[in-house]
Amino acid sequence: MTERKDEIAANLAKVERRIADACAAAGRAREEVTLIVVTKTYPASDVRILSQLGVRHVAENRDQDAAPKAAACSDLPLAWHFVGQLQTNKVRSVVGYADVVQSVDRDRLVVALSREAERAGREVGCLLQVAFDAGAGGRGERGGMAPGGIEELGDLVAGSPGLRLDGLMTVAPLTGEYAGRQQAAFERLMDLSTDLRRAHPAATMVSAGMSADLEEAVAAGATHVRVGTAVLGVRPRLG
Image 1 (cartoon, one colour):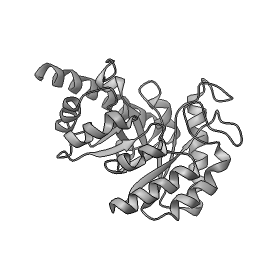
Image 2 (spheres, rainbow, N blue to C red):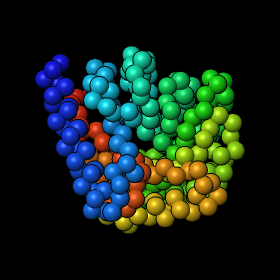
Image 3 (cartoon, rainbow, N blue to C red):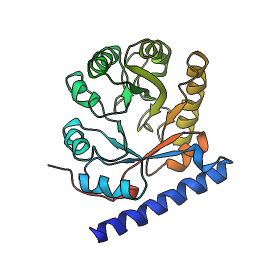
């Protein structure tokens, strides 16, 4: 375990330096960017190490992996983010541990999240997932909705009991006009965030950037970056 902790600590230090350097280059304070470590495919023991090293935000994308892991780590001072495409039949489980759902992209999901949050007596933060590869009324290849749907869905989240509209999230698209242009996509997300905050001033969170493109996200103005392999390495899937 000491060897694994040393490995994670070294990787975490490198990522922290990358974020700090990106903030300096963008004229931003390091405190403006929150690191979320994506712990999908990694065991609860790694989550425990991350907590010991000072990480406070972790993310998962599959409920079948996340639910037992969150339960095993329930004693730790962590905020859990759900970042994967979420089916409504998994909402009750996810609401049991997720502090923030970053992949809200349709009315039906909002209704289900609100119902289960009220049932559980919890307030769940929601990010609207924006897909720059989505058609006008469709969804992106990796989930998310077209930018044109932000206003209506944002109003629905803001007016739903048990939910809190926190902001926007995106994954750099592999196709469409922003393919290979991560920073341009992230800058567009910031513009959309500005529009959203006119109606919902508290929705200040902008989650963008992963291991390969966190610098571009920081340069664009992201408040949160989601980093997995750069911190935890490449490992086979659980199960």
